[in-house]
Amino acid sequence: MTTLYKTKATASAGRNGQVSTDDNMLDLALSYPKEMGGTGEATNPEQLFAAGYSACFSNAILHVAREMKITLSQAPVTAEVGIGPNDAGGFALTVALAVTLDLDGEQAQQVVKTAHQVCPYSNAVKGNIDVALSVNGSPL
Image (cartoon, rainbow, N blue to C red; front, side, top):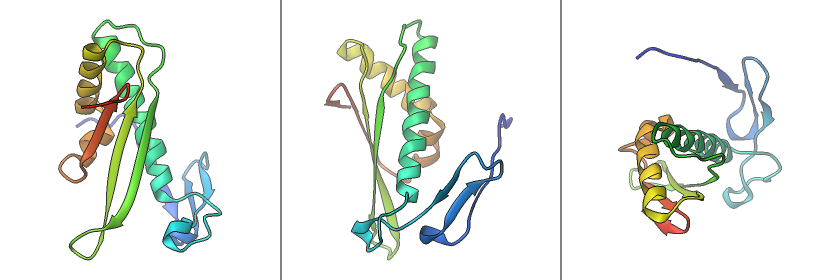
């Protein structure tokens, strides 16, 4: 694979610390969410993952639409990321991506299914996290 872009981020003290990128474009405090016994006063890794996945998947949809000669100016994606204990004594994530497109049902479904094959986040989690997809309120 030819790498087009690289970045680095460093976390100082886990979920109750600070995380920043090497160029300082991102510099955030972290805290456990209240649901996990924390203060909830700062962002957390699941929120960051949801933000990254939703942005990446939205862009994958726009890319696929261009390739298919479909005009789309927006591709809103809401990523819901959950965390919980797994059967091996560790933790696992859940992901649901809800897409809203100004396209008819069949065309919207095809674009989203293809985007799921193209998106780097989808490819990264494939086989590790089941990703629930929906478009315009209908599950895929």
